[in-house]
Length: 425
Ligand code: SF4
Image 1: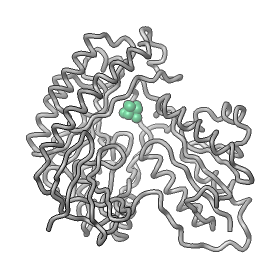
Image 2 (image 1 turned 120 degrees about the vertical axis):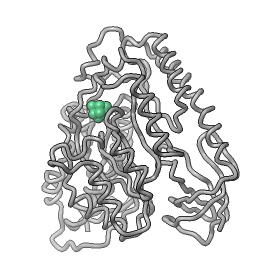
Image 3 (image 1 turned 90 degrees about the vertical axis):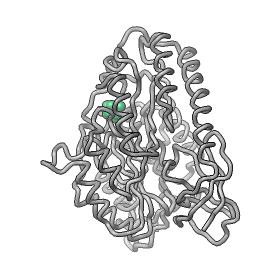
Image 4 (image 1 turned 90 degrees about the horizontal axis):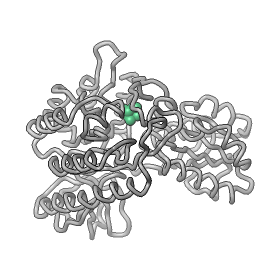
C-alpha cells in the first residue's frame, strides 16, 4: 500500500486544507503516515504570505529535496500557486506542483500510483492534537488590503455551506474534540452571499450542538465586529471570551494607504464596547510596522495606542514588500534596519504587558483543556489561549490524564507568555 505524509507550513487555514487532503487520499486507498522515512509521497503545503513564510517554505522544500531518495516530492499551497514556474525551474527534484483548492487534480495525479489491491486502513491522523480542530468557514478574501497577496492567491471570499460546516462540527464533537476554532481570512464576512444567514446564525447553530466543547473565533475585521456578534459571544457560554481582531495600524493615513477601513477613534470605541459587553475578554490583534512611508511620529502613535489599549495578545509583522500588491509600488519603502527596530520596540513593550497580565492570573482557578501529555507533564490552555500563537499552562504530575481532558487548574506561576499551574478539584 502506498504511503504519504504531509508537511504543513503557514496558517491554520493550511492545516485545514492538509487535513482535507489527508481525508481524500485516505478514501482513495493511500495510507497517511507521520514519518517521512516511511512515506512514498511527501506533500509540502506551503505558505507565502510574507517573505519569512516564503523562505521557510523554500527551506523545507530544499531539505526534503536533498534526502528524498525514491520518494515523490509534491509541493502544494500558496507558494506553489504563486511561483509554480520558478519552483519547477529552480528545484528539479519536485515531482509535481499544485496550487490551492486543487484537491481534485491532486487525486487524479495520485491515481496513477494506486495499487490495484489497495484497501482502506484507518488513517493514523496525528497532525493536530485530539483536543481541538480548526474549522474553515470560508475561502479567499474580497477585501483589498494593499499589502496582501491572499486575494490574488486564494480568490474572492466564498462562504462554505452551513450544512457542511455543522456536519463537520458535529463529527468533531462526537469524536471527542473539545474546542472548535472558527477560521477564515475574515470571519465577519461569513454568509454575505447566503441570503440572511450570517456569522451570528452560524454561531447560534454551532452552539446548539450537544456536547462539552468550546468555540473560538479567529480573525475578525475590526469595523465589522458589530453589536450582534459581540452579544452572541457575550451570551453563549460555549463561545470563549476571546476575539482575534487584526487592526494592522492605528493611524488613519497609514490605514488608508493600507486600503483598510476604520480610524483610531473607532477602534478605541469598538474595544471599549467589547470590553464592557464581555467582561474578562481576551483581545488579540496584529499590527504591521514599517509600512511604506510610516514616519517615526506615526510609529510612536501606534506604540502609544498599543500601550493605551493593553491588548492581551499581540502579533507584530515587519512589512513585507510583495510583488503584485498595490503597496509594492508605493514610494517611501522603509529600510529593514528601521523595521527591525520598530518591531523590537513593540515586542519589548508587549512582553512587559503580557507578563503583567499573566501575573494577574496567579492564584485564580480556570477550566483548562489539555493538548499534549508527555510522561507526567501536560501542556494545557485556558480560554485566553489560542493554540500555536498564544502561551500555554504547564501542568506537572498529571499521570492519570490524557490529551483532550478538561480539568480545573489553579495558576501558580506566571512568565512572559506561559503559565504554570496545578490541578485542583
Ligand atoms: S482582510 Fe486584508 S489582510 Fe486579510 S486576507 Fe483579506 S486582503 Fe489580506
